[in-house]
Length: 346
Image (tube, helix red, strand yellow):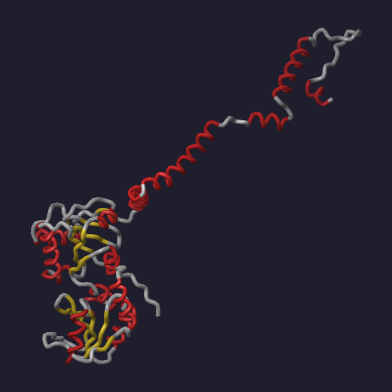
């Protein structure tokens, strides 16, 4: 089997990925002590509870596909803590955020889609790699953009509001939203090709590159929830997108960003890389615009004439015309004059 790693490029994350895919797709939990150990070690884990069934076969199939993202375990009902109450067996349960949620085929759809949506904590720190992975869940990503180096009261308040929306209103927004916070606005600015103030709140639709911003600063939870509801019902104005205009704008923005980054890091190198080609192209354009046309000369040469020959022929023609009336032979007949072309042939 070959597994493609798409997570953050850090030592701990790469080691975690290697340990995860090195073992079986579904690991067994033989005791409650082992269950408590893995529960403390992993922020998100999926557990199949019960005996052999068609659901377990489907669970193993999903685990083989999504083991690159998270851990999958199996256990009997007596291994789980007494606080975990399951209405029916077998069941698939996800443990995260200090609680657990049970898979319901009728409400949650396919098991693969449910696992893909639930493999993240409800609220988490987000960076570029995490945002890329969140795009595969199909959810909207609600982000509180803050500056961790310069924390302010408003930044803490926005993070708290986002976290409360994720935990207290999970039933209303969990299916459609993923919540988190991001340090700094550099990545978001490059993503939306604009400027986002810090601190602020933004909702990203990674499927079509649209984004939504509150029409006014968010002051309380009720105002934030209304904004999320307006995004879901389509009344909130959407910005960006993946249309042709946005694609052209993206090409221009990326080119400008690349040039600016080169000049910021090394101005001399930037002048050489961009100044030399522009200078050569300018000289070529100047030479083309100032060059004399040789079309007439080439045409005359193809017809067998040069400038001197053409002038000589014109003089000869004038002389012949002037003396044509007086040129007669002794019998009173006019002397037949040859044309310049005939003379040239002779």
